[in-house]
Length: 373
Image (cartoon, rainbow, N blue to C red; front, side, top):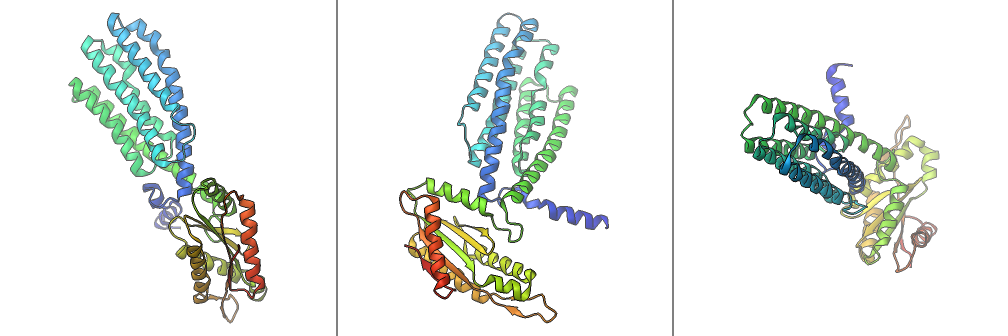
């Protein structure tokens, strides 16, 4: 395999758009990543909040008089702010809120870095004292590797850390010194490494997520995701919810007559039909075998039945070619059960009702949509 082919294969496996922006990420993945980010930031913030006051004995040995007490007060404020960050909600599944946690985790040490250096300049502290505080931007840049970020997110946070380092040096009037330029070079180098590692983490997390939540054949979400989504939606009982359950008619006959490869292609094409029609808040997935499900939040009965009819009718426009020596066109249809959630009804009760609607559609001649009252 040539280098060009290897590069093309790697890019196809990595899915570059997935690690550049969140635009192509599913809501379920964003929710999972938000929780992942929040847990890591809370843990790091707690660690910093505990470790920051432990530096006070060292400050006592190298700082004198008023400067010592000012730095102690600043350290305690720094520690309290980070501890407050750990207490900002114990459960976070919102990506915007998770990004804000990362932003604050970088901002708080940044302010501590700037204010402490200004205090040292005012007091005329020795260079050896500053060495204990100069590593903070480098440490924050290295800690970015612990959280999975997109390229755009990573660039924003790298720029933020670099900015507070540059602003501090400008305020001190030392940006053009050899030491400051060397530190800036090292900071940017760590930033590039952090970007690579954090995007690699994101890529790995996305691959694991897709393997755990996606049906390998159709690419739709699997039964576990559908069950979780349904439970979450039912928890918001004030919103109307419709449920659609599909079953491909005579699918066993297709497998027996044309082979499992043709049957798999039928499943893939039907998944394509669902993707084309189930847009917006709708979540469609493979429920098992030849059964598929669509969850429709904020959807009225008439809209749900109309969507089911569109999907049923759309199946008539698709054909699959068999894999025999003399390929033939294979047509397929679907039966659909439709139901609306009732107040106080459990997920199991709702599933039983929509399954009854599907059973009536199958026993009524197939290729039908039946609303289960």
